[in-house]
Image (tube, rainbow, N blue to C red; front, side):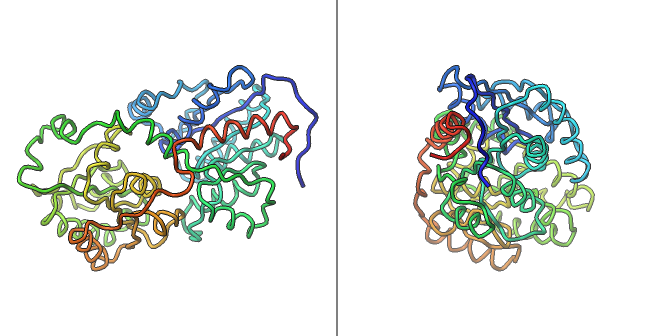
Length: 387
């Protein structure tokens, strides 16, 4: 049933929520698009603190030009249950104090679902950006967050047309769905000229010579529990990367979780070879600079699958599925899973042919956030009804 409310006077209050670094990249262009609409929208930013690395948070906010959060819930780490519950408890008081016209959440992290649940219980309409993505793997915590957030959202913005099919199949009414494109690509377009070159990254790491005598490099990112929490799985992945590094140097920005597991399982010396460069987690502009000039990216990150497609860089996804099928169907992404032979076969093909060229998906044009902001303003002015 469609929510219908009496018209409310401007300015219209929107509470925007971020919780983890992938959210920052999605929220940055949306905040800018809201600001461009002028005083009709009163926008506040809440950071739940789900990712609590102060230096990295500051690095992302500063690099992406996001205004500092109006409120930081400082939730920090914990199990999925603890984190979700703590976000809900702390967000409720914020919602009561702010009394917004709507709550906007992005992505699929625990904070996304937690704040959406609080809002809908308070009868505040929820807007979900990046809705409808499905891996069809309920073992992924993010999949649970996606499905449940979509069910309780009143306005759902999708990045690819498959999202509409997924939502309709799950009983979401057509009038709630908007196909607007991908805000991650807005951020990429806006920042590409500012990307930090790989030469600068190597210089800062004191490894200017790392690529001497080599024709390019690969990038590895891995952080998902299914890839790094089991010692045999992680060992196999690292052994595969060593085989790749014998042909193409590998730059490996190491996620804190992955670093801890490598140390825990005693694998640190495995990567102590001259053709693998371990780096600390990268800021957005540094990671963008690494990706745009890479010959291949190996990753278990959903966002990187999208970014490599937009950049035209071959991507090998170290998972058995993806919630972003357009990156495979139209982009540069190939699903490899964790089978070493399959990963190496795909890598060999990329080295031989240059990999999939792909094409830029529909509406990945750098203007998704402008469409989102205009739709939201029209929707609120129309009494939270679709035109």
